[in-house]
Figure 1 (spheres, rainbow, N blue to C red):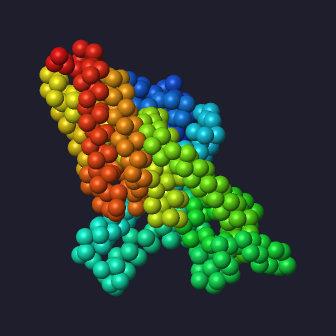
Figure 2: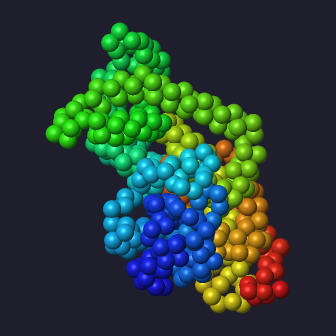
Figure 3: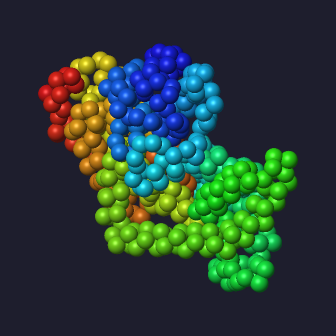
Length: 463
């Protein structure tokens, strides 16, 4: 494994040099650069680098699969990139620049949500595990539900969802290059007790602001209003900085933004986001109620394909996280976890049958990545995409495991990645079915890979 600095320098050169890079973000496992000209990128050479698991070069943009240490690689890459004099003035992380390469609206949306939600992943995962351990302690009688200890642990685990609008405001502000403090203050006004006191029942009642009637709802745990409001804030702030003398920026800009955007968020973006959330929730409920077995099989079976193309963040952010924030649980988290274990089973089949020592070691690494961190990309790109049949086998195994979970209506209590270490997040009456479903997915991926075989001579598979 080369040093992070050497890997970063190699990536910089193979991506067309520092002047070809507009901005760089990362998610849980991938570097996601925005480039001026993708034709300058040497994809095959990047893919061959030691330290790179795979490369996705689709319409959505270039994605370089690193693994669980992507944050360290990202930090090293940014230092190397910004050390160049020609790039020293570029934005550090997420910027609001418009890339020169053409993208569809959907791909742009995926890139947006990745940049907004990626910084929150460790917090969401940690809160999810703490919630899972607390529920597990309740279930086995170690922690009485009426105890003050249980109350404090529950608050620690669920506060992230109550204050989600503030967290989203901060990460959105970084993405849109505007003040995170003003963004947080604006959204904070909508979750203060006095504002919540204006909401009657489930919301929808009207209040007046300067004689204008506006509907109000409870916006704790809401995502969409924070993103839309912060986007508008960035446009207003940029406009005022150009038009107002510098000496007045400190006083005028925050005052205007608070005066204008709090009522705009409360009366326009808030209700809009609420209605969209209700529509999405109703759609998810309709899909789930059709047939849980079919839903589990479909979600489990296609999830690795969504990950393969990097679009899994769309359902994660628009369906799963809002559902957990509102109801405290989601079946889709459980169904999607089968995809990880299906691929782990396929990787184990290659570990058992391959005579290629390097491939056996990589397979073991891919399995460990799933079990310990719930990260499946090494298995998908290093084995599934490369040899084809393990990807098909993993998807089929995951579909069977998802169908089994659907029979017993398995749910997860927090947004986590499916791995052995996150099992406590599924504590409750259906925990046993969740574990059995994962075993089925793993066994299915293993069995189908052995059945299909791997024809590529590089795999050196025993017959």
